[in-house]
Image 1 (spheres, rainbow, N blue to C red):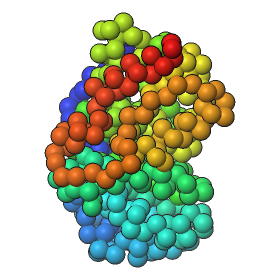
Image 2 (image 1 turned 60 degrees about the vertical axis):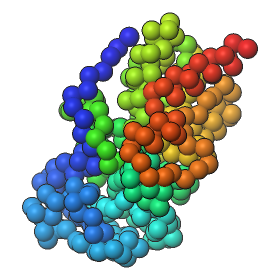
Image 3 (image 1 turned 90 degrees about the horizontal axis):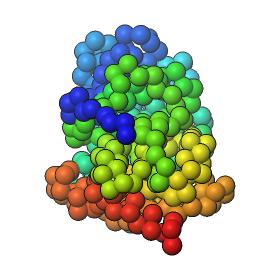
Image 4 (image 1 turned 45 degrees about the horizontal axis):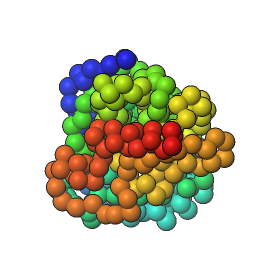
Length: 319
């Protein structure tokens, strides 16, 4: 079984900052807007090196989205930055009307997503954002798994014409994807080949899926692991090709199971190839305060939970 090496824990928001810094050097049309969270979004280097292209909007997220939409008319490529809760829930009307409906080339970049925001608690943790954003016509939705992938995705979305939601996080997590990778929007990554069960994961749960596959392998279970970094457009072929072989699937995400990646995959299976599915996700609940590790364990978003889900779905497949 193929294994992956953690080259050192890094936060994915720093991957965004590194990507934005690179874009500042290579694409003069890229501009950055922030809602009073420059340090938290790691946008400091861009601000320092390109002050004429950085706009501190303050705690006025709706205004930030409106300004960004207007900038696209002049050919600029605006990257907006704030917490995921404020990037989506607080400004959904502005995103729907000024960005999605108008098909504006705005890149909505959202940090501190999911439970792993940690101690800030339920008011700042958002577990509904992928669903909110994927339902907007024309919106591309990306959820990256580590520092390197986030950096590559940040660079890639500048060349994509149209609105994008890029989701990443606060905690330091294993960095295991290639440093020199080319990020392809809408293309799933097959990390491990397997024959018994498909595990599809996104964001912080990708590394946990790899760890789960190791445990399952020790039990004689061959798990196929797929990284779905692009929630929309979804790589339906990759999912169907895998499930045609394994006949069952586990989906894993740091998001509500209602409206998330798992639900998108359920639609694909129902339309083309029905198969048993287990969901590793939060179940119609808000979060709470705690360390990221405590919360991921309590809400069942870790390798152990993925192993249990795989065992359950295999029983359903054979019963």
